[in-house]
Length: 164
Image 1 (tube, rainbow, N blue to C red):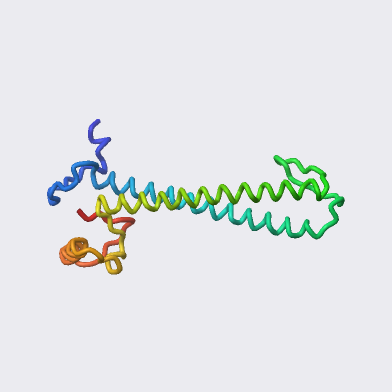
Image 2 (cartoon, rainbow, N blue to C red):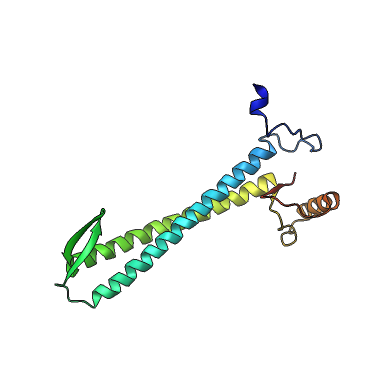
């Protein structure tokens, strides 16, 4: 029964100096990947809402040029309802404003998640594949990267690399 739960965690870290008293390397990478996915999800939602704002703006600009008493149709909860332009236009402007507020909140959350990701990367010294050349800012990080490259013999393929 114990072998069932430790299928991926059976690798022993005999070569590392014990600098990570907390979670294992697999847990750190999994948490980092989850955090990145959350940030991507927020960015996707923000992009979708930006498209909604663009569509709302297009419809609002079109309806502003139309007679306010003209009949128009609006989809509300899957039901097409008949209204006039003067009834629909304020509702569209209000919706656009509300969507803009949500996009601003999402952007704030994405920035906070980005700072959290950066702190997490620095705390566990996470390096992404292919970024070692452009991010050798601190001497300790560049020394660790050069010793790893000399031992490893090149860049390895994978989602993320943990350097301890």
